[in-house]
Image (cartoon, rainbow, N blue to C red):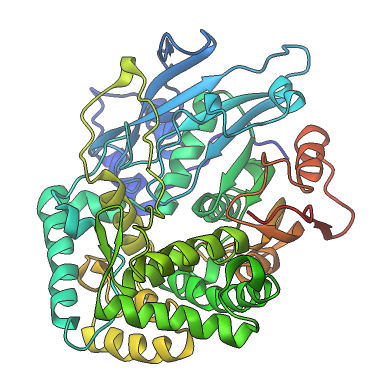
Length: 510
């Protein structure tokens, strides 16, 4: 099942064009035949120039830059650099191969993942695999895209309001126009399918016939697309906190809104049982009433939170993802309620984002808006299902706000993709029997359980481990009850005999 050759990723027409461009003076008949069979040979046969990434990490943590075509249908066209890193397996005798890593996003840089302490992989995995990090195309050190967006334009948490909708339409159009002006035709090639192709170039350059993979959140979709495009090059794939592959990408925003409602119900029940502690209501109905009164009060008079005035919409946006962590959400609502009553200023509920270190050997200027620009590039170019009519977004936002009061209007409001130039290919239909292991918390605000179950159905050779009562986004490496299954699969290749449900510790709520 291991394929020694790198199969063509191109259409026959592109390969023919490549050959017709070669003259007898440039190449022999034999080389023309080789190029026709393997038009990506110029990329798959690269010799990476490995360098130590930085002085702060082990010398075995090395970095390199590979060249890949911007457009895989035109391999002789523009090239871009893909930054990759490697932390070699700690045991040469036990080494099995490579484990590619992706942190999610889209737009998440993964170059430093092999040495990220939050990855927290067990020693037996590190003994068997070279850990391979990489920044996906358009991200970080891999031909980073930027649109010149202001801080306000980078803010995509926009609720629907009849009086503000025209402004939101203008925001969405402005983001799309700025990105098109800055990045031009490159945008249509910043897609999950092309990142999967880049991963296969990485595989070939590293001399591996197959790759193993650990991807989180968006990384589960990237991994699933790879299994669909390159099933015979897929070894052991762990997909942690999975998306619904049929709902990319507008549907994933709506999945978040849908999943927020049962989390809110659960939180109100948990909080009511602890009324003496939080004083938010004796019953779930009273707790919900207290919360919505707080929202209305903040809409009337914004609440001071560390010097920031929070409206009711701001609070809905913030707490949508927090209600899965029942204790933390209860404490936050108490803080906001006290601040609204003038008893104190509520501390900020948004943790400071810390940017991972950039290896000095590969440091280059990364646009300040790279996170937003690269995310929209993938979200908008990956699929052709984004509505083009702003009125469709208006109707959907009104409907979904009634269905999912916490977040429905945020999820369905207009996005820059309404005005984005379509990608070069339609979205991938994921439907195969490749082995994979899916890990999922029951209470995940970003990739709700329903989406992970849909991924499991699409990957018919997969097994799924559900953490009952598990809270938050991300499972493996958090000392979860699912860790054992993931480690066993990566180190032995054995999937669980059947789908499993394990229970989170009763004291996990925080």
